[in-house]
Image (cartoon, rainbow, N blue to C red; front, side):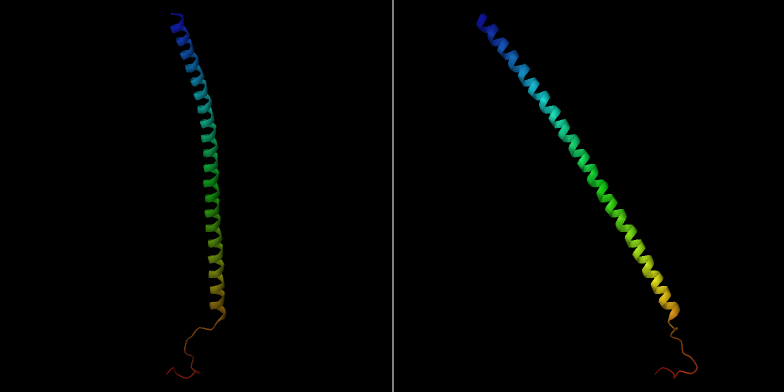
Length: 89
């Protein structure tokens, strides 16, 4: 009987040790998961900022190009036929 009781106590001690190790691993996994979530959130935030910045830059560039084209058209004479020019051939 003493042998069975020692065996049972050894099994209980082993079970407690394994439960303790598993609890520690779960805590470690939780911390790792939280770090990964933070990193993923920061990555998406950075990507969003890059996309928004690109859109704003493209809008600024195209609006300036449009203004430059309008100014060029305002200063250049229109290609209409004037009475003094010879007729096109």
